Length: 406
View 1 (cartoon, rainbow, N blue to C red):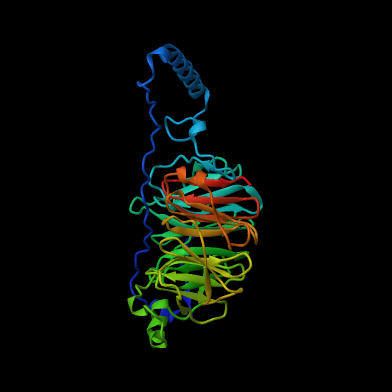
View 2: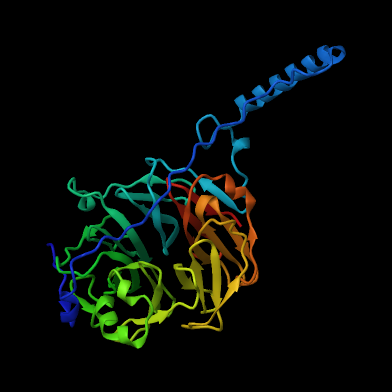
């Protein structure tokens, strides 16, 4: 029987403005063509016969190797032509071009079983640890009037949750074999961009207008964790000196959660950031101390913050916890934006960004080395996800998925 979400202790939230669009820009990759063979017509006549013979041998050997090599990537390219990612392997997905991959999660009770989400109503499933994927059809999520963008997925035990835009909430209690759609209130402020399983039948979801809701009964009822939207908070605190608040558009660009339940979010214009800790009634705005606008922020493995700015800059907060004091770290971004950072261990971190940018740090993010082989991938890499020390993925546009090999 269908149930309807009930929002309690959230009168201020229900008075928020109409829903605003949550945009995510993508860049279409350029086509790569194999280099054509070029003949040399300037050889001396005395060596023309020997040179011609050598060329014929080379051409025959090359053609034979191309015929024998299995093609695993772009049409017309052999395996030897694929970029050598060393610690990463590209996984080719049976999806349409243009899909942006947004989130990935695995079932804790079965580490080989996982789900991958994206735009254009994309849900994919793997049962071999992420080596191969197949498209998954969920009847309760199919609607010919909408083309859902699935933003976030989370599992604990056999329980799992998915949220997306337009507003959709899916729940499973059997490790994803069956998904139930849970109806949502039309007055929900903002679009749901994040969800986290916090316990048995318990979850926490966040909208791009700053609403945080919690359920402890499988989604039958939800309670607001904050008393107002971020827009309302800024209207109250604009006189406190938050730079750029008058240009606030009412939505987050990104939001990330720490293991202890704290959040850091970047305003849609990137001119300041906000934090929230469990028990606080409101989001706390923070001025940025960097000249360039913020691209993304998240949590380091040691509990501190990392911060990315537009144009490729990377900063680390001093100490742990929430901070407004950051030091710049030198990275070889070459002008390409760095879009996300993920920590595999407390020391090892990976950063990904535009035009196949992939960088690695082995000292907690203090120094970075660019992984040149990934530059051959014609895609923007949006998200770095390490599910544990051994399982990691990089998600990008046009269905680009990299799997960590270690």
